[in-house]
Each structure stands twice: as structure tokens, then as C-alpha cells.
Image 1 (spheres, rainbow, N blue to C red):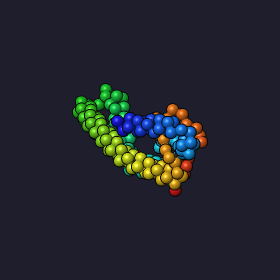
Image 2 (image 1 turned 60 degrees about the horizontal axis):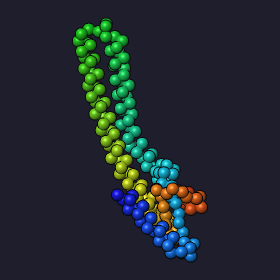
Image 3 (image 1 turned 120 degrees about the horizontal axis):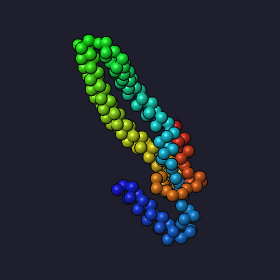
Length: 169
């Protein structure tokens, strides 16, 4: 819905430019920002990724250790099931089932927690990037800055590297 609103505003704006004549269009300063590049290369995004990796790294490591333990138990069951006593076999099967449930629960919880934090951090990053773009646009007196939904843009109007430099400060 919001995207359609921006496209409509952009379309109306462009039509008014063409209708106003070439004198007005010659003075108009338009820029383009490639958001995918900003989200891949900007310093705040890299810092956020490092923060999230640090935050969720220990939990991922514990899950990997549980997976290794689970795989060892399954391999032991497969290899030694014929030589194990009935009680040993039942005990190992219970441990495997219990560990499998724990793994599923831990994995789901980790995914949910990560998704929540990714969204929180993503919203903050979007706000910071947008504020930086607006600040740069005002400072350099751009009349219009476009991002998604552009069919073509020239390197002359691409200010992505300027925004990256601004975000690196």
C-alpha cells in the first residue's frame, strides 16, 4: 500500500515536471539510491550483523553441539543395536527421542528470537539509513531522491556511494 502511494506521488511529480516545461526540469536535482547496496555494504549494517552474531552465536554453538551428540547417539544405536541389551537399547532410544525434542524446541526458539531481533535491528537500520539519505539530500539540495521502483538511472544521479561514506562516519 505504502509502495503504491510512493509510486503514485512519484508519477504525479514526474508528470508535473514534464508539464511545467523544460526550464523547471533543468533546475531540478534528482538522485537515486540503491538500497540493496546500502543494506549489503554500509558500516551500520555490518555492525548490526556482528552484534547479532555475537548475541546468537553461543546459542547456535550449543545447538551444533547437541546435533553432534544426537548424531553420535544415532550412529551408536545403528552400529551397536544388535549387541546391546534390551534395557540399554530402550535407554538409548529414549535419550535420542528426548534430545531430538530438545533440538526441535531449541531450534524453533532460536529462529523465533532471531527473527524478532532481526526485525528490531532492521527497523532501526532503515530509520538510520533513511535519515542519512534525507540529511544528504537536504545538504546537497536534491529535489527528489528515488530508490526502489526505478526502471533506469545513470551513474550521474546515483548517490549510493555518498550515502555509504556518510554512514561510515
